[in-house]
Image 1 (cartoon, rainbow, N blue to C red):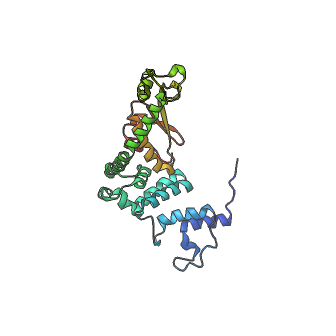
Image 2 (cartoon, rainbow, N blue to C red; image 1 turned 120 degrees about the vertical axis):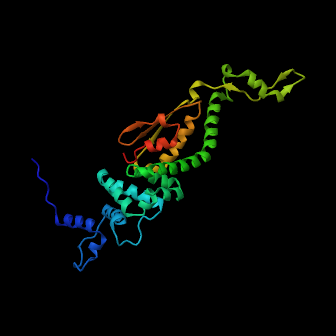
Length: 278
């Protein structure tokens, strides 16, 4: 049988300080004295800042409408608090802060300047977003993903196809690997009429099978801090899946491994299939 250790006075003061906030150290409130004789140290300082942004009604500035700040705050609460507490704090954030207006009202989401940071925030909060807003949130994610895909698809496709082409041909073939038809066409400009021959300055050969990469497996870390990276990874996976020359599979992992290959045709389905933070 084990017995719990008694709570020290310093630990008791620390807990009260975390509950009551910064005002407790400054003698704030309704004349309740000089405040708690305690200064926070180490991680307690960061935890206090995270709590203050959400629960301190006297703060002069909170998370506001800044998506990078919101995304960073969501990452911080996952760092300092257990999952059950994180879920409570996320719901409180939706009720107390401007997140409520920014994320829960379809009209606001439709007009907000969508970017990768906003997508990361929506994915982090997808489990607590009301049903009436989920479709709008999905449309916002779709807008960002489509815009990124338009910018990335052609360069990525050319890079992959170029790599595959280099894999199937070589300019330094062994004797048995020379493609004579292509080599002759490549060197027609060196034809010597007086000798009736072609000088083969450039050799073209068949590639070796082992140099051709045809099967690709994308492994994506779905930890909470990786939200932005997951957006780009899902687009990269969708582009690869559209190329018949390669076989692409996609798995996400954190505490468990999940195969999302069947959703590769649609990056948005991949994103909503992830579970940020485990």
